[in-house]
Image (cartoon, rainbow, N blue to C red):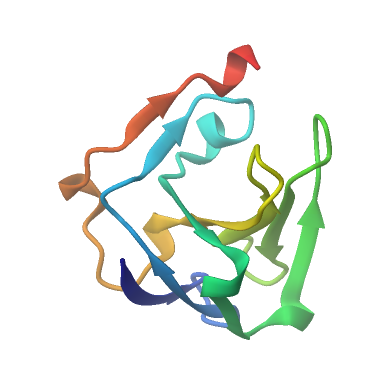
Length: 116
């Protein structure tokens, strides 16, 4: 587990998170497949939104359980809020939005979200 900072393209949304980047996923669901997100997950208590709460726009689909949040200025979804299967509150971090991370050096697990 390491502490990371990141945010959206324009910089209005900034966050800090403690997350394990050796446990990332990619997903082929209707949203992730189009976004190309590489995701890491962290307990919500390990995630801090540093700035940009007022810039976030919410999108929910399918079961509505995940709060997809994107910057109203640049349109980037740098994180989402939701629940793990056990009910624990989680943050899903778009690793592409973490400062200084080479996503091509990661080996994400592929998840078949399309079949859920």
